[in-house]
Length: 115
Length: 113
Image 1 (cartoon, rainbow over the protein chains, first blue to last red):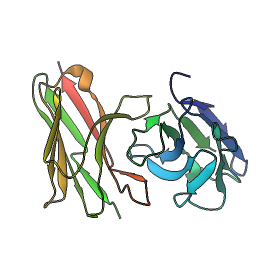
Image 2: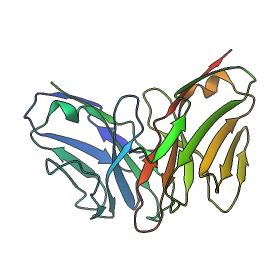
Image 3: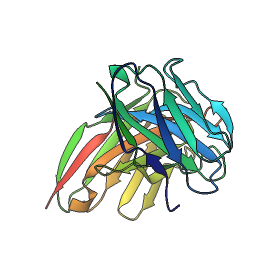
Image 4: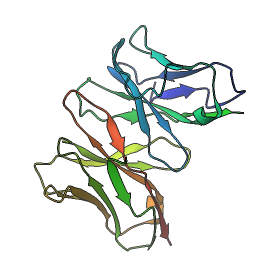
């Protein structure tokens, strides 16, 4: 596609439910990043992949959060047993070659609201 | 602990004026310093970036000034336009074995016509 896409754009869920957020990176991009952005804050790194391999998951807040990219393209960020504090904008970014300083292209985000 | 301190939180500038946003960092291992521009409802987009081996980089109306000894870098927007109204984020990255972009809290810029 022309850019990074994410779905759904908005997700409202009840506390305790599981949610799955999808990221479709720019075609052919090697690296894929997940960030969380609270209102009025800068993005906070969660995890990133090169191809299908998860390289760094140190930013995942706890074991309720997991991510996968099984075929090296689309990625899913899953939050189990959601809590109100999980409410935020979740952003995905991709970069072309996997080099550390490649430009990261961001998607429009998924706004998650946990009631 | 905020590793990147960005100021001001908000900024109002008249059309044609100069907008200046500042960032300070602590870790001398950071080796890439990008600025991102974010419009409402959109994801951040890379605006301009600098490596620590240069003190200034200019692209059109946008200039990054970098002071390695002071561990500070700033974004200057010359001849500010209403279309520049957006949130600006500075970020840092350590390109070694840790590629995390670490972000400032953002500056909301409003350019009045």
